[in-house]
Image (cartoon, rainbow, N blue to C red; front, side):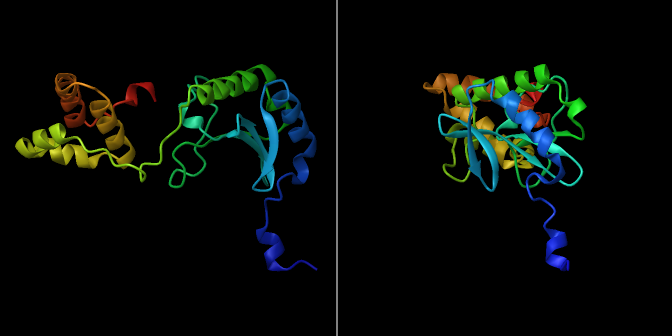
Length: 195
């Protein structure tokens, strides 16, 4: 007899997608990723870092790219399944084996591995708050700049601050501030043009 709690448990990782997931695994096996089981499903790691995961849901099966935010995604395959929860994870959903284009999937996975090798990760912004005294000073003199800056998400604020403060010399920092002021006032994130 089915209780309600059984119904809730929609996602038992493979359900009807066993064959499709094996097909994805066969593609992933051509890369240097190592399969591990985490969170009850297969996660593929490079150098102990999680790169991708695969799983079956009720209406689709998917590959998710743990740091998918950095993928170029020229073919527009990826979606952010949980806008509010995850900044970096992206999902590629399929509803049939025919939809899986091996060459494309491999391209995306290899790019994800490359990004991992380059150490592209979103740093948890809670860890270290970057303070830019020079930018603070600008904002004191220019309230419109302060308002505009505060409209950005914490992550985008962090990108600006990191960009300014990663310069070694004060004159470089000032030059970078000059460069970002029009962007901030125009509500353009530092990396928007690449996103």
